[in-house]
Image 1 (spheres, rainbow, N blue to C red):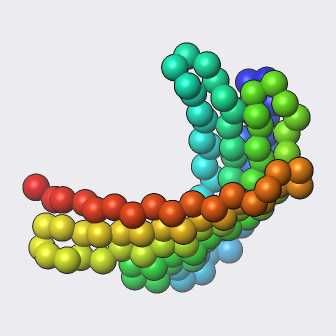
Image 2: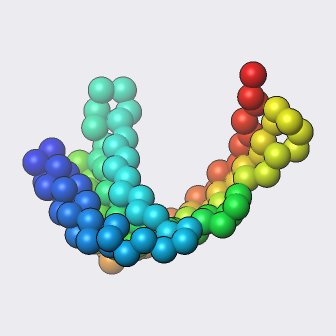
Length: 120
């Protein structure tokens, strides 16, 4: 199972590597692996191969996504997210992000993240 996760992560990064040669203002690559545990039990992982664009405090990104549930078959799908951050004072920023993921045999998932950052 771990072997499949590592292989999926490597394949995603290698598939996106040629895009780094096409430098354009505001564009970036964001390969990201997320694993989940409950106590010492591994629940599964997701590998996202996102291409994104940012302008100032705004960003949007999306691309292929590989879901590997523990003990299950890998699902290939699509995920994306967009967000913004803004200063409210010299030492405090607030931010928000909305996300989406859809895999063939799983209902679409949505996420919302709101937070703040205090600088010392």
